[in-house]
Amino acid sequence: MYTLKKSLGQHFLKDENICRKIVAALREHPFTRLVEVGPGGGALTSHLLQLEGIDLRCVEVDDEKVQYLLKTWPQLQGRIIHDSILDINPPFEGPFTLVGNFPYNISSQILFKVLDWKEQTECMVGMFQKEVAQRVVAPEGSKTYGVLSVLVQAFFTATYLFEVSEQAFNPPPKVKSAVIRLLPRDEPLAMKSEKHFFLLVKTAFNQRRKMLRNGVKGLFDPETLQDDIFNKRAEQLSVQQFAALSFKMR
Figure 1: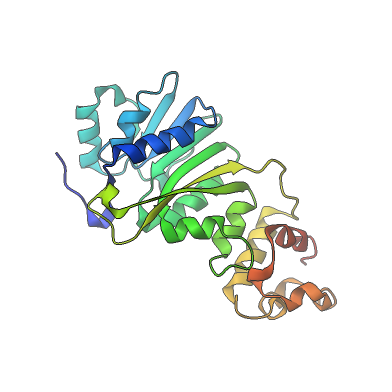
Figure 2: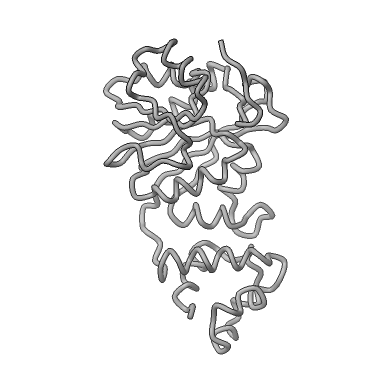
C-alpha cells in the first residue's frame, strides 16, 4: 500500500459516502476541466475518474503516492502533476474547477493560491479543518471574521456545505473537518485596485482589537480619517465597506 507522512499533513479520506457527497456538490455546477489537489490514496480520485467527459488533472507532491496512484489507476498516466499546488502554474489554459481534501498544514496558503487563480477558477469544492472553513464563510461582526474571510469573499461567494467526522479519515485527525464551496461573485466588487484592497484589509486586521483609525492611519490622509467609519473595528466592516474604503486611500 503506502505510508502516511505527518510532515505532509496526510490524513486520507476513506469514507465512501463523503466522497459521493463531494462529487454531488461538484456536479451542481457543470464543468469539463477538473483539478484534484492532493489525491493521496485515491479515495476521491476513484469517483472522479468515473465522471464522463471530464479532463482530470491531479496534483500530488509525494513520490510514493504518485507511484501508488499510477499503479492502482493506470488511466492516470499523464494526468498527474508531480509537484506542490503552491509551486505550480494553473494546470489548464482556460477555466477549471478545483476539488480536494486539502492538506490542513497549508490550507490557508491553498486558499491564497485559489485567489491567484481566481480568473480561471469557476468553482472550488474543498475539505478544510473546520475552523478554517468557518473563517472563510464568516460574516462581519463574528469572532472568526478576518483577513481570510474578507479576501476570499471579495471575489467568491463562499458556502459552508457539510461537516465531516474525524472517523472519515485514516488516520483520524485531532480536529473536525468541513467542506465548503467557492463560486465567483455574480458581480465583481469595485475597488481601487487589488493591491490597495489587500493592503487595507491586512493592515486593518493586524490590530483588529483597535479602532480602525489607529490601525490604518498610515494609509489615509488626516481629514479622511475623521469619517465615522474609522470609529469601528476591522471585524465590524463588511467586505463591501472595505472595498469602498480602498478608493479613499492615499
